[in-house]
Amino acid sequence: MDRSFVAQLNDYRITTAEILYWMPDHKHVLQSFLWQNLDQAPRFPALTKFLDFWDRNLDGKLHKVTVANTQLIKPAEFRFSCGLYTLH
Image (tube, rainbow, N blue to C red):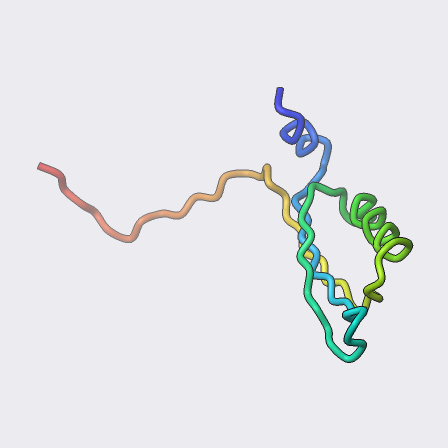
């Protein structure tokens, strides 16, 4: 079975984080970086590990992190049609 599918069954969700950081060479300029991975809400261990790595090893100081996530496997959503169509 696919590894990411098994992770989704174990309550991992696709997580997207927009990371705003200060440019190392231009201290007054903010730069945006998008990070996306499977992670577990609400603790987000993979994102936390990445941000710790960033803080220890990269020069750009973090300013703001915005996180969004959603479950990939969820019940199907049905909508009913408002019309009736005849095919010949």
